[in-house]
Length: 178
Ligand SMILES: [Zn+2]
View 1 (cartoon, rainbow, N blue to C red):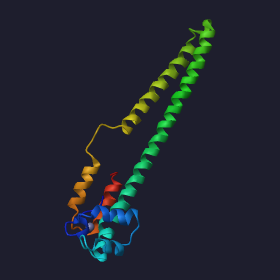
View 2 (view 1 turned 180 degrees about the horizontal axis):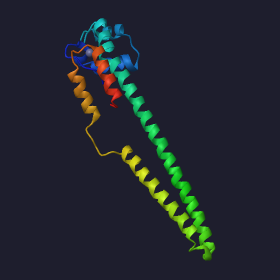
View 3 (view 1 turned 120 degrees about the vertical axis):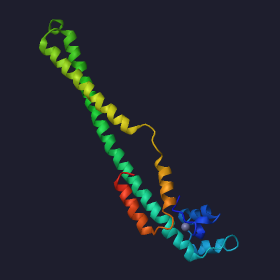
């Protein structure tokens, strides 16, 4: 994937996919690609270089940063999630031990202090479960508009806009959480 310009020979070339593979995966120089294209769909090394500089690398950089941002966000969420799960587990263990003690000493069963303690634990567990549910909803939100689609529209709309402006817009979008 890349930015796209109808004026760019590489963007519109039917060998675009191959050109990207040769440069990005096999590490070919644009001069070598120019040679390879000579009898197929000639594009100058300068034009090829411009294509990668304007229509590929900025997009890759942006996607990499967006990816890093997403990973950091989910890592933060995961840490919170794990800490709540640990709290729930600790509470359940305490509850189990307390219940064991209660059942062993039947005369304690109706002691107000014991009932208060149990009630407190249960309330806390319910509260933790509520927090957990809230975080789970963030992990698996309701399906929403595909950001990839928005991004495609964005890239098409950016055609002919100088790349430095596109980078500025991309930066702003990233700060908004896209
Ligand atoms: Zn291009």
